[in-house]
Image (tube, rainbow, N blue to C red; front, side, top):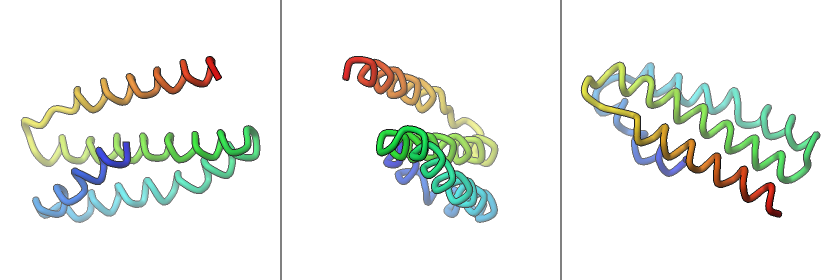
Length: 97
């Protein structure tokens, strides 16, 4: 998820939408540490990692929202499908182990 976000990170700046880029970073700032600490208190290291993944998911969705608004014709259906597939794989693996 982070690599998907980082690969598109400069797009908002390149089209001159620095406010959307800043709001994407604020989303990451506002969710990363609180979610990681809150979930780590409940589930330990697994919760900490889950908090980071959830934060990255929210940040990516925020970024994709702004990109879709700023650049018409860009679709995020592949991102959403990939995120759902990753979440399903992590859920299955957590049940197995």
